[in-house]
Length: 486
Ligand SMILES: Cc1cc2nc3c(=O)[nH]c(=O)nc-3n(C[C@H](O)[C@H](O)[C@H](O)COP(=O)(O)OP(=O)(O)OC[C@H]3O[C@@H](n4cnc5c(N)ncnc54)[C@H](O)[C@@H]3O)c2cc1C
Image (cartoon, rainbow, N blue to C red; front, side):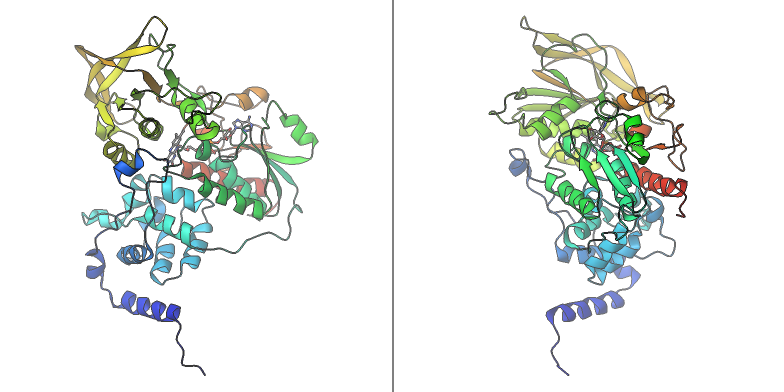
């Protein structure tokens, strides 16, 4: 027998000893890992990813902070119920591949979720450390570490296509998750996407400095490896109808067409040149190369740019504007920082990149020059009143207090509505007053028995992980509806 102990084994034994020897007190005294990131100076001139990912050593140390609670509340805070202590303890054992396997049991897009999920409002907000007045375990950072460094074997199904054809409209996180689950169950899944790129908001909305395209492409490739087909430039309800799909032998349709219809405020001057929706701005830059000067239809590069709104979309737009050369980039938000829905990390990064926050201000009109280009915005100063139906304190105008601020570009990011095309193209599909497809919340089945729906087309602008959760539930329900056990 050889006495040789490989470096890997030694490392694993060393970690094992360290893990066993740590008391709860020692674990709780480890400070939370800091995400390595590009400096603000480096990043305002580049679309390179800002967060660089934890090192192996950082991930191991962070994993030691997890107390492996008997009743882990972090799991209940995750919309897809990832076995969080399960994957973290695998990191601690040095089993990154195994950790990835644990995550992949319930999440099909871990590299995406590890980067963009609002963990501070979900899993991390339920971590036991909060009760101890300590920073929660960095679950999101660890998920990203595992997704970037672990390997899973291809799970290609042998029974592919044996259970019949399923159609999906839209290739965002809801459609991708549904497609992955159905393919693994043995269905022949085709995802029809209206745009020329797969990924939905992950590609056309969230900028590369937060979520590189290569990450989304890897996830798409792994779906292709389990047999999912993608058809680009195909609009369900226009290029191909629901009746066409049924006639082609599809047994069910999952509608995941998102909420890509921008909202405006309806205030004077919104039609001026230089005022545009956040969707248009980000899609043109992220998907059509409109940020580069040699593009046929380059986007206007404002020097004084105001982004109206306080969500993730607004942060992405304002940080993009800085990278496009804005000297003054402002967030105009009618409530205070405390009510801002954007992820805390995004707000922090925007501040570091020199973005100004005009909180408790609301635009009431825009002014332009003779050529019709915007030159300034009039802002109403606001204060906070009683909580409104959202539970947040309502913004109330302070009478007589208005200011004019010079701008040459305004990007409106005050919410989105569901894409109306599919609901209007299918008779008998029930929609809400806001245009969302109405579904049974457990099964995601619509008023039409063979049509299921999930993600933003049902929720009207939510999150990646909620869209994924819908896709999962719908896949299980479609499988059952087609006569199979879950
Ligand atoms: C700029 C921005 C930043 C965001 N940041 C975050 C974040 O940090 N964290 C987070 O959790 N969430 C974030 N969100 C929200 C999140 O991205 C969405 O909730 C999520 O993408 C919704 O997924 P979905 O699959 O329902 O739809 P989408 O991702 O919108 O995908 C829908 C797809 O359907 C296609 N489609 C539409 N109509 C048709 C049709 N008729 N036929 C075929 N295809 C069609 C569209 O082209 C699109 O590709 C952000 C959103 C935006 C816009």
